[in-house]
Image (cartoon, rainbow, N blue to C red; front, side):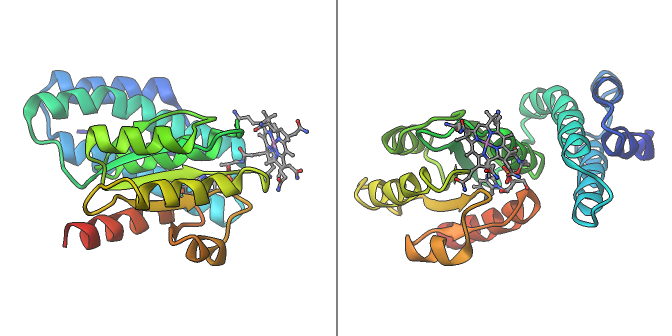
Length: 212
Ligand code: B12
């Protein structure tokens, strides 16, 4: 399998090529996990280039779109084969009053690329809707994005709603978005990650801790 080509399709943000490479994997009954690793290596590289200042937002978004295009083909095949990893279930959304969804979508994409089952509620999501969905899908983690200082308090509402939800143990709350900080998160009893790449590592630790 052309694993280097898969990685390159994501690094170069070529969604059409990523999709057709993924289709070849599925049609050829090839190793799905190995293909996901190759595409994930691409998005990892995109993240590094972004952190180094080599890539800017358009390249980041195109890389994520290419990754999503590949995952859209690979994930149903994984589900059919019954080998889908159960690294944890995550409900993600941008909080009520906030329409910024680019960062949230990137975080959701990388979480699903990392093997989590992700339910994306979109943007402008009320605190109660996060909790309802978490109850319905038995989520391990609720991830909430806020890009406005005026919408950050909704993250605190979600923390309170989860604490009084009666869910045992309550799903862990992971917050993020440009105006948020580790100090803010600690103050509301949530975990925090600065970017989509760290979000995968933090979510992994939260699930491990919650599942004990
Ligand atoms: C694009 C954009 C918009 C677009 C949004 C389009 C869309 N579909 O998302 C539009 C034009 C609609 C918009 C509107 C507004 N915007 Co605007 N917008 C931006 C802009 C330029 C980029 C945001 C972005 O997508 N960044 C790229 C992504 C990849 O980064 P990110 O979102 O930060 O996400 C990363 C991390 O934060 C983290 N992360 C994000 N979410 C999560 C969640 C979790 C759980 C975790 C762990 C991590 C995490 O990981 C991500 C990837 O690594 C920012 C400026 C900026 N530089 O941030 C302003 C900005 C956020 N907007 C701002 C404002 C004021 C507004 C408006 C109020 C403007 C107006 N007067 O109408 C409206 C509000 C609309 C609303 N109700 O939401 C301000 C906010 C100021 C503040 N601190 O409150 C900013 C900072 C611009 C500025 N300098 O003034 N905006």
